[in-house]
Length: 301
Ligand SMILES: NC(=O)c1ccc[n+]([C@@H]2O[C@H](COP(=O)([O-])OP(=O)(O)OC[C@H]3O[C@@H](n4cnc5c(N)ncnc54)[C@H](OP(=O)(O)O)[C@@H]3O)[C@@H](O)[C@H]2O)c1
Image (cartoon, rainbow, N blue to C red; front, top):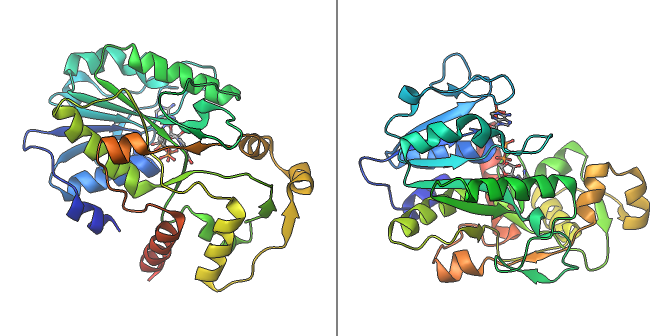
C-alpha cells in the first residue's frame, strides 16, 4: 500500500521540484508518493488528458516542454524506454534542456536484461553487462549515453515490474496465465511501490554523498514462475491452468516470450538493501501479491 510507503519514506526538502519523464505505470507511482509527501511533481505523457496538469512530450513528434515549463526542477526520473532504432529518445530531445536546468539528481529506469543470460547464477552491479537480446543491447547504449551525459545520473536496473492491476493475478483472472515448467528457471521481480521507494531513498543517499552509478532494484527472492502462479491461484481461490512443459509451451510462445525464457539469472539487491540501507516494502512475491489483491479489490469497489 502506498500509505505504508509514505509512512516509511522521508520527504524531500521544501525547495524540491521533481520532473517525471514518462508518467506511465512506474512514473505515476513515484509521482503519487511524492505528491502525498508534499513535493511538487511535473509529469510528461505523450498525450496528456485534457484536464490534467501533465506536460506533453513525445520524442517521435518533437512535441516537448520548454525551458520555462521546467524551470526550478531539482530532480528528474526518466522512465522512457530506448527507441526502436537505437539511441535514447529523451536525451536526444531534451539533453541540452536538462543540462540547463541543472538538476541535482537524475534517475534512469533501465532493466536487468543488460546482464544477459547468467545460467541461474547470482549477478550484481560489479559484473559486466553482457546483453543477449537486441533490446537489451539498445538499453545498455542508453545507460551509457545517460552516464556520459554530464548529468548527475543514477541508473536503476529493474527486473519484471508488477503491482496492482499488473500482476499474475490479472493473468489468472483473464485466463491468459500459463503454468510453464522449465527446470532450474527463475525470474526476478519488483513491486512498483518499491521502485518509487527506492528512487526516493537513492535521492536522499545521493544528497549525503553516496551515489553509486548503477543500482539493482529487485526483491529478495528470484522464483520459478509456476511457484508464483500456484500462490496466486490459492489467493484467488481459483483453479490452476494445466502444467505445460517448456518444450511444448515454447512452440506457441511469442518471440518476446521466448526471449524472456532464454535468460536465467538471480539479480542481487545487496547494494540497495544492505549497503545503501533501503528496506523493501515487498521483499518477496508472497507479500507483494497479497498487497496487489488488496489494492485490486479496493479499486473495484
Ligand atoms: N514492464 C517491465 O516489467 C519492465 C521491466 C524492466 C524495465 N522496464 C523499463 O522500466 C521503465 C518503466 O516501466 P513502466 O512499465 O513503468 O513503463 P510504462 O508504463 O510503459 O511507461 C513508459 C512511459 O514512457 C513514455 N514514453 C514512451 N515512449 C515515449 C516517447 N517516444 N516519447 C516520450 N515518452 C514516451 C510513456 O508515455 P505515455 O504515458 O504517453 O504512454 C510512459 O509514460 C521503462 O523504460 C521500461 O522499459 C520495464
